[in-house]
Length: 87
Image (cartoon, rainbow, N blue to C red; front, top):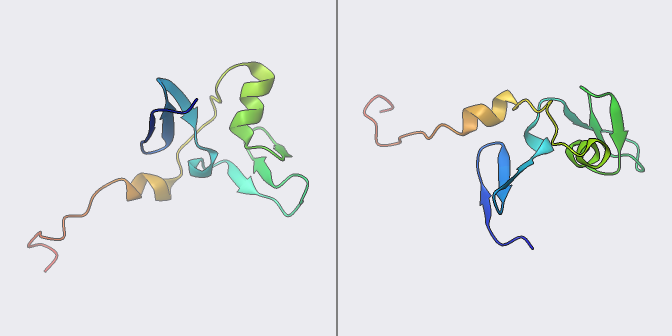
């Protein structure tokens, strides 16, 4: 049961359990194959599920290859629109 859902920069926490968000990983990519639409460049595989779910299912451990994409790192910094430097 997903009671406590708190989104933080690259990970999502479900009831004290950390879940990796593949959409924010630099190794994640979308494929043109309708049967295997999601892929991981680091582990060189594609499939119907998110790569982090496949890694967890096969190894029993969370994905250790996660690396946050630069565009998501930059978006986490808040911009102060009231700053005199901007105007």
